[in-house]
Length: 81
Image (cartoon, rainbow, N blue to C red; front, side, top):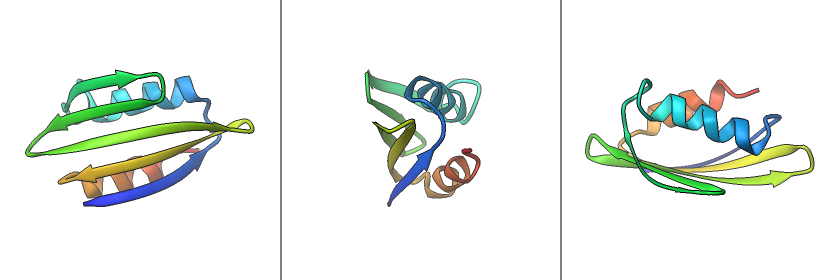
């Protein structure tokens, strides 16, 4: 299990879209099980990824909690501007 916090220059909407593309259909193929304005939940492969987004002064903080997808979460976070 991993709990990782990352800050990006991306706005909240663009960060949400990147999360969906990376973890969802067309990416890793996880099922988007829940979507709220600042939170997503992906499930699949015996685990989950739950990102929570918080806008902060022209940036977005993303808190990523995951089980079974630790390496993929780290890869996503390292690719953010």
